Length: 99
Image 1: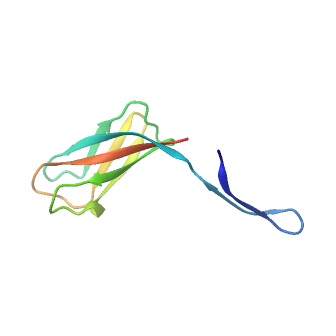
Image 2: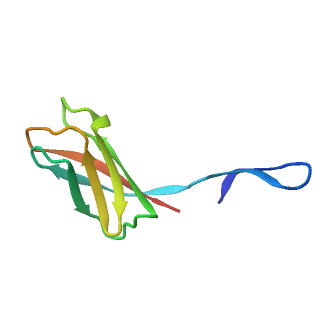
Image 3: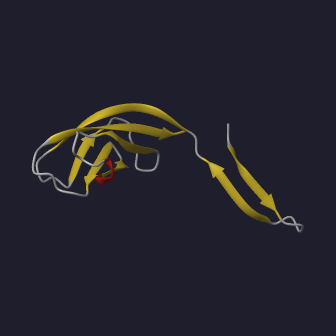
C-alpha cells in the first residue's frame, strides 16, 4: 500500500509530495573480499540497478562497517571498499527489492 504525504496550497497546487518506498528482504550474500580490493562484483539473480539495493551488515572484527557500501546493477551487487585491507576477508550483505 502506498504511503507518504502530499500537501496542496490554497490554489490547489501540489507543493510537497513525499513518498515512502516499501521494500522486501530478498536474500543475503557472503562477499569474498581479496587483499587490497576496492570493488567486488557478486552475481545476484533478478537484481536490477533501479529496483534493488544492498546493505553491508556484518564485517570481520577489526574492520569498520562504514568503509563498505553497495550498489545494485542488472544481475548483481557491487561492494565497494573505501579502505584497502592487506588481508582477504568476507562480509555479509543483505539484499532488498523495492515493492
